[in-house]
Length: 468
Image (cartoon, rainbow, N blue to C red; front, side):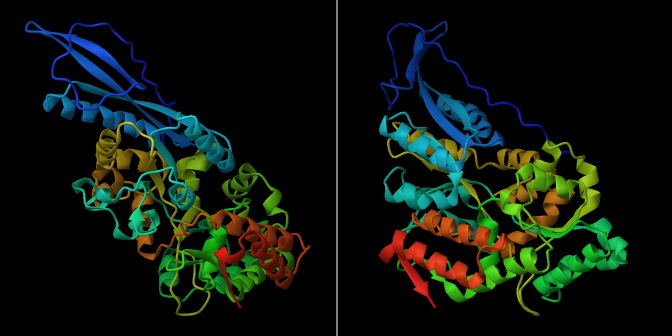
């Protein structure tokens, strides 16, 4: 079977400025920064080419997000040459290894000094503040372009704010429940029962309560140390849980975050049950390191995991064997909270945003169209355990032959997104603080709701809708 590849360090192309003869067929774009000349000699004449540097930045280890742009630039240069334009595009790539908050601050400071990347890769939920502050350009034309014609329609919802599209979809994913096949076998489940579990979830026959009951049984019999794990840090899975309990997070018409108190209370009660009451989840999990939580799963010491499909990539990075992980785990949608209900997942597409100060908007747009090609989508998806944004990527032979990724693509039919609103981070911070307090036993769910209401009323004032 295929293992995820170890990603190579991004290559920054170094271009020298070479003095040339008089320029002919001058390009339509010029720049005082990021632009140079390159002389090409032929028997007929010497032609001076303009070097246009486009900066692209991402965050984290998944470097294909920017490396693919550098590859796409090679095709763009071929097109420009065929059009008779003496322009050579060079993509200068970088990756930031710090926190998301520092990544935001880094972009803002760079923008203020006009040194920001032309293409800023980030989560779709960042659109709200980026667009509201006019840091980025609207990209409505992309949706109607041939390059994006077969994008999964639901994914466009993640790129919208205030009636416009603000991001070029880069990749997507799903957040399923991992379940340990070996533990279910030890509980006496047959092969057919295990293979049929994802279908039971789809039909609404296996609920969140059923998941907790099976986890408790495995824990009581000493087959696992923990029945159910969730992420140790603030993040979308907690909002996925809330939506599963019926929470509305956003009012698009008002462009305001919604604090849905009844649904959030149910979610906090569920998390209290996992940690304080049933002890299926460590009550200290929000103070644990990611690597420690991943290791529990790698070692088979937990039955269920509110995870993301890319976590297999994380496990391999942490030393796990890919084939062994595929034998150990299977994957299902997040079960409904009620019998007969619809299951769900949540996707967090990464997007390319374009700086409103870019000096080469036309070239950047052409680059974004080229990088949507299946070959780039598939390389990134297979290397890093993500899903392509378009149907042509999913139909590509290399992706289709990946048994794992192709088996979870159907989850996009059940997906949801967190909202693109500039105030969502403040809401998420208050929610996560309540979760932390409840899981360590310092707050009751009711006290968590009261804390959130006080916090959100103070920080967001009229920018939040509170529903009792």
